[in-house]
Length: 92
Image (cartoon, rainbow, N blue to C red; front, side, top):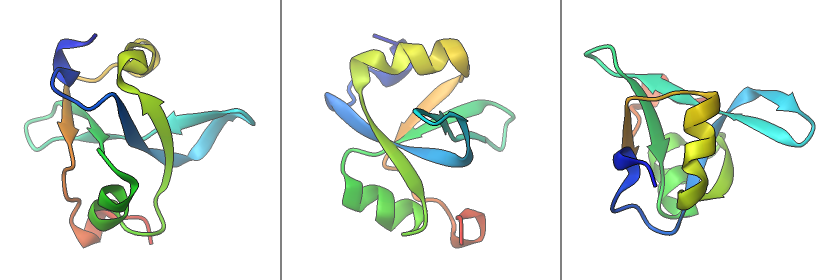
């Protein structure tokens, strides 16, 4: 398990971007923090993702112990759980 995701629930909802790697693979949306780090946003429940990211946000459900696969394909520095995204930065 990744150090960045210790303490996360067994499965999390991850925001995905509008692009897809293929018909069966979504691209997880990473965000840039104010200090320049790359962040993975994860949500402990679907209603939290909708409340924090907006109802237009696409998503994928993933087991937390598999997040190392995301990290290998799309490296991130930090991971945040249930972080509220300002309305101005949400998909509309």
